[in-house]
Structure formats: C-alpha cells, structure tokens
Amino acid sequence: MDTVAITQRLHALRDRLGWQPLHNPKNLAMAASVEMAELLECFQWLSDSQARQLDSQALEACGDEIADVTLYLLLLCAELGLDLPSLLERKMRINESRYPEHAP
View 1 (cartoon, rainbow, N blue to C red):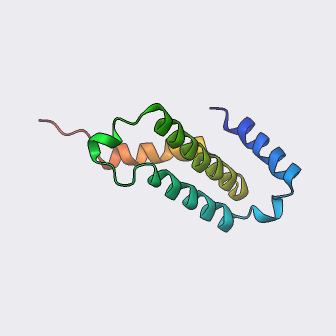
View 2 (tube, rainbow, N blue to C red):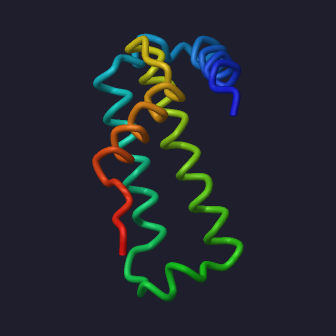
C-alpha cells in the first residue's frame, strides 16, 4: 500500500471539496471512530459463526467501512506528521517483544 500516494489523493479530494478547515486531529479521530462504529454494525446481532461466514454483500460493506476507517487514520497521521507504516512496524516490534514465543 502506497500510503503517501493515497494520502495525496485524499488531500486533493479534501481540498477540492473545501473540507480542509474541518480536517483537524480531533475531528479526524472522531470521524474514524464513527466509521469504526459503522463497521461494528456489520456484525451486530451475528453469532461468531455467522460473523465468520458473511455473504459477498456483507463482506463488501465491511470492506467499505474498513477502508473508511483506514482513510481517516491516514488523514490523521498526515495532520500529526506521523508515518502509518512506521507506526505499524514499531507497534509490531513492541507486541512481539511483549508476547514472546513460549516453549511448550
């Protein structure tokens, strides 16, 4: 995923629509949270088994919400001067060291 190119496209769309004044860190974090709630709605009232066997329409809806969350997070990273791939790599290293492999 080329996050720089995607972020540039997001900024171009934002600027064309005049949304730049609304894209501050607080608003972007709240928007990502709203989109995450919409993702949760895809699974509302489903059993674990049902949630693992979504039909193509439900999968597409979930994918759209995952994309929305990710796009807002890219915008938030841009506003804060953070690089998402670097953040992910750093966090994976932390998690791997926090939860080392245990011998049986």
